[in-house]
Length: 208
Image 1 (cartoon, one colour):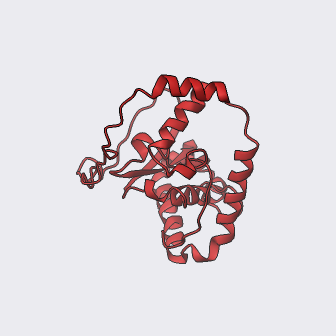
Image 2 (cartoon, helix red, strand yellow):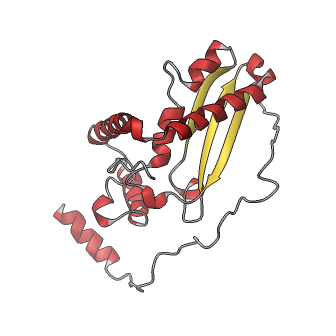
Image 3 (tube, helix red, strand yellow):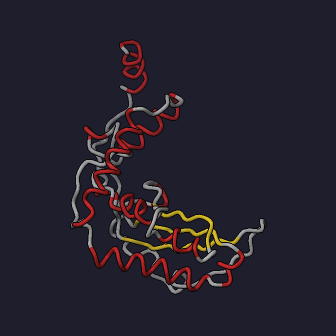
C-alpha cells in the first residue's frame, strides 16, 4: 500500500487543481419532450425474437444515490414470483422474460435526466397481444403508485441486505477496471461513499 501511495503521489501530484466546480447540465430540462419520443416504434430484428421495450425519461435521480429509488422500482417490476407482472404474462403465454431498470451512469443517468426502461421478451402469441402486455405493465405501475412505498419498507430492507452481501463477498476485479470505476465514483458521490456509493443502499426515504 505504501508503494502504491508513493506511485500515485509521484504521478498525479503535478496535475493542477483549477478549483472549478463539477460541470452540470441541470438547466437543460426535458431533453426528450419532443413528438419523436412520444411514439410507438416498430423495429424489425435480425434474430427471430419479439421484444417490447417501454422507456420513460424522468427528472435526474443521481442525487438520490443513497436511496436508489429506481433500483427499488426495478426490483419490484422484475420480481418473478406470485402476483408479479411476469407471472401473469407467463400464465397468458405472452412473455418469456422481463427486465426493468436504469444503468445509473452515463446516458441513462446524469444531471439532466434519468432513463427507466422495462423490456419484455414476448412469445409469438404475446407479440399478437403486445398492446395488452403494455397495458398490464402500466396497470402494475399504477398499482404501485396507488399503494405507495410506505407498506413495503421490508422489501427495501431485503434489497439492502442482498446488495450488502454481494458487495462484501464479491469476486476480485481487474485492478484497472476497479480504478476506472472508482475514478467515476469520485465524480458522483461524497467522499465517504466513493467505494460503496454505486452498490449499497443507505437510506430509506419513501417520499423520494
